[in-house]
Image (cartoon, rainbow, N blue to C red; front, side, top):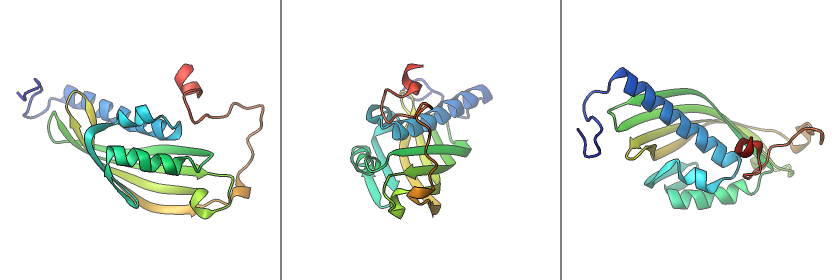
Length: 173
């Protein structure tokens, strides 16, 4: 047994399924946090001593949050979609996780860096302390496509629009 009561040896199949589900929820919370600009939720996805390497950025979780918030403020909308996920449990307390995804970024400007769709992978080291969180992340960019601002179809006002804060339906429904 580890110091927190979790087994340190091989993990049983039921515990493995539970660990994978918990890790997948962290990735989903991360996407919500970025797209809804929920700083508290974003921080909850990382251990306090985590390290993130994200494009031109490399640093602590606090530095990452400050950096990504400056970037996110430039966009009218972002949407992160995750696809394939491979969770490789090393023990009841450690996992390697690779997540494939696509991220959409939209702004009213026609600058290519502000209107794009990107294919990415998150390569993560997760650790379970009190709960599963990201300890180390490397964001890998696979491809990126510019979508001119004029190519976006306007969403009719009669439809509910996503919000980039806690007034979004995801928080109150």
